[in-house]
Image 1: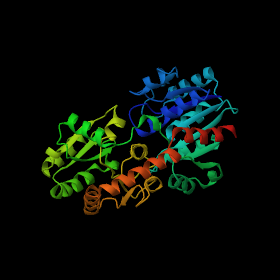
Image 2: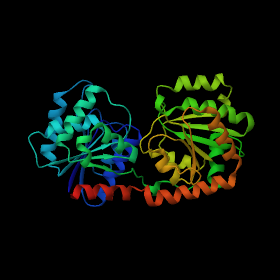
Image 3: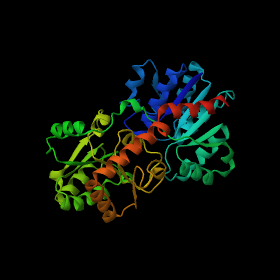
Image 4: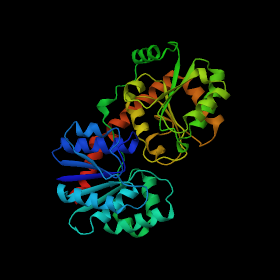
Length: 364
């Protein structure tokens, strides 16, 4: 089967990680895969090209760009896909326009988030659904929301959770914790809290830093390790200084060794105000880390409260601080949560399971 994936870019991010891992898994199963980026290729494109999966780009402008439509149509004409699999909204309506003259090729869309749509964007996406054979949400809440937004197409909707390459993620051990504290220049008794997310408002790092400041007053050995980068970094660094915890907080920026870093942490926290089916949460589970996450979006589908982690209210700083303190003081609970998280990832969070679910849709 020839499968063409369409994304905006392949810069660092959860959606992009899903597309790359899915295409690599599909290629390993014998399918011919290609990825088209509407804008530029992005920093992760080389991972596919190194495995002989071609990546092209349409250099789309920010406004409606008919040249990008023609570019995509030309690529489709050369590659001859059986399936065009688009990721998120703009990719779907660009692909629908590119496929106007070819009714045989099936168009599949995955909606990776649950954020609000602008009025024009919602209209364009809704029109493209007339050409779309199946619309996938990455968590039950995302699919439910799509059903409310586009009830006419509800019969075409499915839920397929994201998956990751579990083999990339070593499990957390005390030895790896020691190696990490040494590499970061931290005391060996440090209790390491981490988050992996872009530094943008929806990820709500501010809430985490404010809660960490309360936790650090009672647990001076606690350290916060923030992995990821973005426009908010200067503001968040200033917040840490204002709260007096800048000496206990490390901004590591974008990293290519996230799996190795996670294997040395003690606790993973995701304070988002909204979330789809978070790749970073699946990675934390695969690493055997206990988790605290806000009770939003698809988070409760990954983090089972009291089983592999704890759920907390969005923007409730004292509640998050209290949960972090209690979990850091309870090593036995952290280990139990981590073991349960790894078991969940092995059955529900693998790229193999995700690829098979998509294959079942393609086959229909």
